[in-house]
Length: 329
Image (cartoon, rainbow, N blue to C red; front, side, top):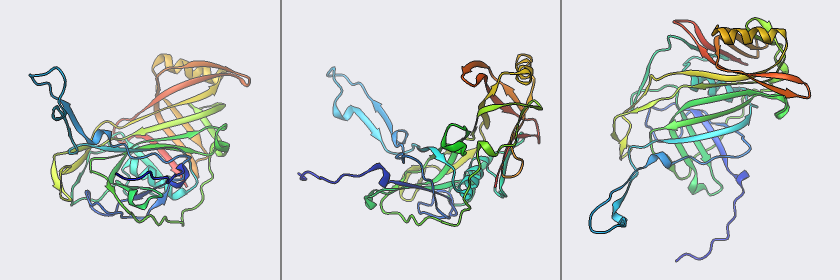
């Protein structure tokens, strides 16, 4: 029996890193350039969906026996989420946009089209828009590597009351491969250009072609993947033989606009089910353009600054039209 361990760790001792994985899908090593994501707190990897469990009732007694609870650590999936990242590194922001949009040749902007094709990543054969996620622990033996990770959701927020209006990012990474636990190399790249853009840099704030006064804007891109098959990879059974990224891509969000004649016009658009263009930014260093958004509701909020209308929306697109275009340079 081990004696009492008096070691105490602070949450601030944990760090998180992300890279564009340069090795083939299923390779369980760190590859690509690692970038540090400095969030207020570092979440652990969620292992709960990595298990298949079952409680099997059998005759002979009314209580489950220990052997009647089955727990199999195979064929599952894993997630890691980050939140409230005040974006400080241009390279990190562009990497996140690349990973969620599937853009394999980013140049400071990311775009998702209505006719976005299905992408299949094959184990051992493909390289693409998936990542290595490293959670660095003060106990080096407890570092965690979640490799071949898909950024399935990214939320970007502009709020003048938070972090001085700087852009804030949150997201969820997903992997079908069992994470590696042990010492991992975590030398972060330091060459990223400082990124300071945010709410107060947006010289254009318009909806439906009309200028409006906003006090918050938020958009979420969801682009999930699904595991294909069960193979033996890295001597582990039940691992994916491929990923299929061919499901529904969605862009949803919300904005809060001061109630005035221009906003009243957009409420008319909501009632009519009309499409509206949402354009927020400066057209160069920070810009969000959703050409054919649909409002999904609206509510009034009374503040000391006046009455504001909260307008949730969803993006739509047809054919080669853009669902969303984001510039971040």
